Length: 123
Image: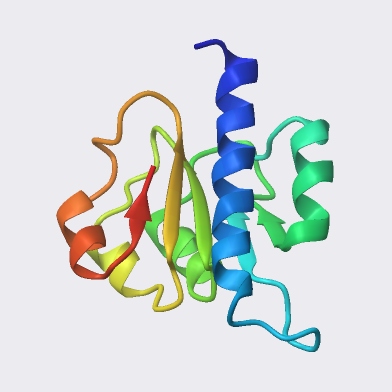
């Protein structure tokens, strides 16, 4: 799979998550918060912005544990990158989190057991 296919997969996952959560939203409810631990190409951001409250890591670096905690506390979807350590403490600090879409190869950076226990989907 090349990078273009991977970006397309992320968009599909995030759109699917948004549609799944939209059953519980009314027109006056805020859009679900989606946090990207790294920014993506403009085409991806442009497609996601109308669907959610899109927030991105403002710096081109891996966030510290404390920074990640502060950014995802209200997130419904987290799009993580390979170096991000999505451990139990991070997952438990994000009570609204429903989906982690990992942008990279594998998912050994995510505590899948904790995510499963908290009913957070991982892709």
